[in-house]
Length: 160
Image 1 (cartoon, rainbow, N blue to C red):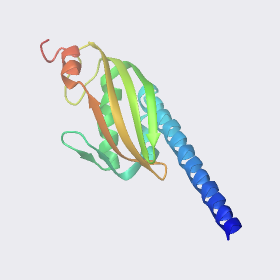
Image 2 (image 1 turned 180 degrees about the vertical axis):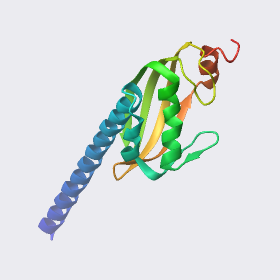
Image 3 (image 1 turned 90 degrees about the horizontal axis):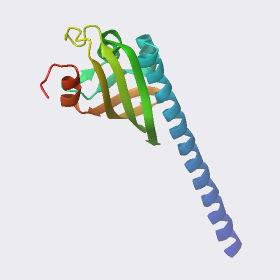
Image 4 (image 1 turned 120 degrees about the horizontal axis):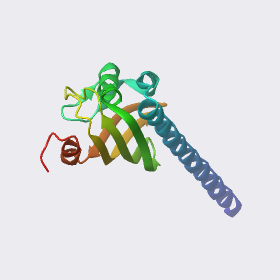
């Protein structure tokens, strides 16, 4: 009986270790995938990469919320068409389960229309954080946090 109990405990430990390793491996894959997506989309300006990165029913928790792949792609296209000299740098990423959190920096020159705002030719340099959910290799939702007042001040739209 004692040997059976020890064997059962060993099996449970091995199973738990294997499951934990799989979760850590998936978290690392999600971090890599998510970082590559935004490098391609923002730095290279290839917004069409979101067509395979986003789930059909993706939700961007903005004000107001953006729902659906086509609307989400159009949302991010504003950054690519509105700014030149874009640099999107991921400073740090963390993942647990299907969640990825990235701390980022965005720099660019506002030389095109951005969400209806005509070009100001101002440089922006903002930091923010995004919490994303990735399911089956697709981004299903995002929550972005940044200092919008600072961003609008850098664009020259809001007074300092």
